[in-house]
Length: 501
Image (cartoon, rainbow, N blue to C red; front, side):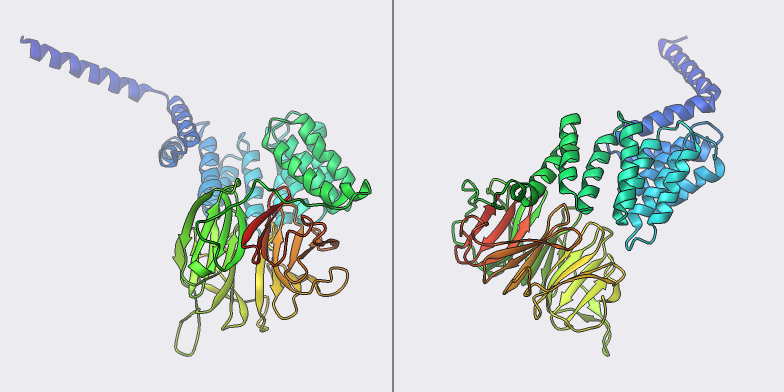
């Protein structure tokens, strides 16, 4: 026998032995290996490989004890990554049909609640979301219980049931003090007390987050809330005026002066200014260093959506995430392109609210550009500025009345602010902004003043030039607010972006 023939024989024998081992491997052990591999891939954001592993279990090893876990991971992928609510729901419901007593069943109920919460636009599904969270408790001792309690509190908070939200959040703190949800629950308690008109107790809760959970991300958010609330409530309680001072180290500049800036907006990546005079959006980091620009064709409006993406309203279309979007409305001659767009905002689920100056209406479109209809009705109006709050309400500044309407996603007017009347007494409102606490800021160009309203759209205070950097503003035309309540204002007379803190 030649040496080559001997090697071939050994190789063939090894192949047979390995094949025999694979065939004899128990399906449960193979399923476990696929699950561990999928979880590892998922953690590395290698989602295609992760799904291949999970799907292999569901397809070929559905009788093993790991099939329910694989379905839960697949459902979470479609919920968290793809945001495909139908596919996510299909996987969660399969768990409840096929594996109702498994350890994944309470997780399936929890994520069905999350699905309803995240897909809700007008508050109609929140009761159903809470019902699914409550079903988690049918499985005593399961690890999803603190998450379900937290999410129950969050849903109640979104419904405006702040007393009940506090109770649910406190249950997390009292019964699960070491869980990953405890810091977020304390934040929720603070937010709810702020909405209940008790800023002192709210600040106490935010400070507790910082004291007890200093290393988590919620501690930074708690500090932002403390800074914001103390400015409006703490200083007056101490007998001191509300005061913003100019940050002198912040001085963003270009080689040439800014030209016809009409909008300032803040995103997680920095500060953005819409410069109509040069048909572009220019960006700076938080230190004021130039970081880039985006060309725009006839730009009029700028918005940062819930994901931190820029929405630019150009005259004949939108630029969203850097991609052009053309919108049409029906006419006698067929679909007609909008040609005089002035403002556009996008809600957290992707619907677009667009004001067109030819139509003299706000029009609502689905994320794919399909027209839903006029919003909130077919009444003719002129809109200077728009915002969307965390719940999905649309806030619109009317050009003629210089007033503000707050409209729910289903078209109900929730609040109407007549900015030219007491107590705000604004002469020429030109822009609006929302801070993370839901406080609304209305900018007065003529008076260089800002009226502030709380998250319930009740008047809080009117900031005059004496409160705003001792008169550094002369002709403010746009503003935005960061996470701690600092103001960024573009002043057209000074040709400068001013940071007030």
